[in-house]
Image 1 (cartoon, rainbow, N blue to C red):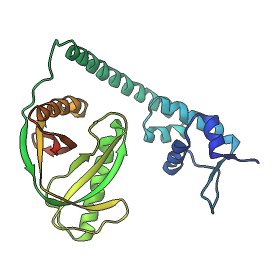
Image 2 (tube, rainbow, N blue to C red; image 1 turned 45 degrees about the vertical axis):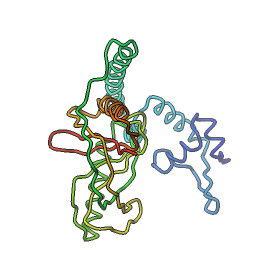
Image 3 (cartoon, rainbow, N blue to C red; image 1 turned 90 degrees about the vertical axis):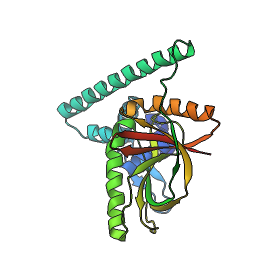
Length: 257
């Protein structure tokens, strides 16, 4: 049987080479053969239909977990997964339509961004363990919780005490625009050697502008936008953003440069 190179397979199924590497590492679409010396991947012609199904489902923005489950699911389970994703897409469409109408009003000058109660304070210097992850918005919460459990376990095995509340760092200013990349951080009492995906951070004290957000993540963007405008009007330059859970809601903020 003549195998297809990864480039040939990518052209046939409508996926990029980088996407195929990602799906191979995720176990969604593994190559038929991997060259032990070069690491080059080869696919069987019989895998083309599966690759085309993956491409079609990803165009529908199906989350990776659902995609893997759907490919091996019985017809009834596949239908249930697709119906759930249809509801998810409808909810997203409604939220985006509401945002589009809001932006239209802003552009026409018919309304302004709702004001936020901005607080300026100093982020304390601290040691932390961190792990960087990326996920789509719908899978973000479960990924965050799982990663936080991983950090707590690492701290316990390292014999270092957890000293504060976890927080997320977003080094790009866009929040919930496509797949998210977050550095999940857990404050600890002392520096600890990192290993694997876990790294040790020493964060210096820094000024931040922040506001308490009481809604869910779908409305984070509006609070971030109002916060950014307020900080800019006060002469500050916003850098990385963060989320910090509190008993009253989620503190959203920007580190100020």
